[in-house]
Image (cartoon, rainbow, N blue to C red):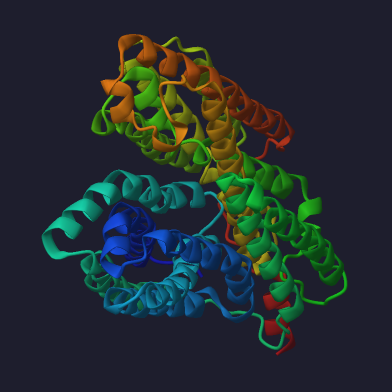
Length: 499
């Protein structure tokens, strides 16, 4: 039954608050990481504060998506929010890095639900025609958090201490929980169906092995060779075993038949393109701007800000347009084309240009990506059976996250290897900083600028090619119109009739 306008507004407010809370947590903590590691005396282990959270949130996406289909998205959503708040409290009370890592694992599990369940709930209670507009509003939480998070993290850490970076989640989360209890409707699951434990364990091991292989590979060093090979082998064998399990069980964790649907498959490819083409490089752009353009760290941050701001504006505009017309194919086609063009401009920019030039180029990448990143979720949901809404939403999100992890490792490794090989003999790669470059002679500064441009150019071209794959995928997307009718799930309707 459709929600009343008031109930829908309350629901969107609740889901937007929760999505912003989950997205903010990652960016706020990243800013405070050095302070946390220093006070806990664990500088060498500080990466686990991020890695533990990322692994937990990635692995649990398909599990929570399936559980939402089986027992209802409302229960999973509220449980994830409560777990996230409890874990945030424990993170703030952590006395050493081990306690903080364990709390971050729990927080990552809750974060997976905060990311996934709002999209799943909207897919359950709104018509396909309404979804792009509402998903774009909720999806705006991600770029908004990227813009606000680093500043908020620094201010909170300086004013109150790093523990409040986690504790600040509590009052916001309680408000969101109160809204959610009132606004999120009951969504029936499929009682009596068995959860695919074997598939969940196998996929979890495979994803963990893949993420670790990518992280170790990006770290470089001869000592990393064996661990990378072992982890990659476990990931490959695990995926093969997972596919074999999914083909045999009656209620698979990831229904493989969804991949035979052209619309869903194209949406999954486009989601992977986003992870590979944008999320993998945006964290390296400030360093490139500092080295190639001689900008300060503060000024170099304007380039990713322009990217994220472009993403924020375009996701809201295109979501509204898609809901108004019902048409969706044009948005990924134009979006991938714009993003590819922006990356090609970045590849061929000469050094020494005003900073607004790369800002405009990366803003174009953000505009292009934001133009379809939430629309493809709505399209995939409309193509899947209602009873698989959680699973298909999780699949689209999972491939984006895995693609981002793998591509980030590759891009980082290529930058490190390229810069180390071509660095002037007067500079040491192990101690290279933007300040050291700015203090060097004009000739050395020019050499470093040319070096970074030559290293980054093929990377930008490669990422543009990834968006080129997205252009081809968009051309294969069926040109349909989103329905303005909310259909009952077939299996649930059959169960109700039988009862």
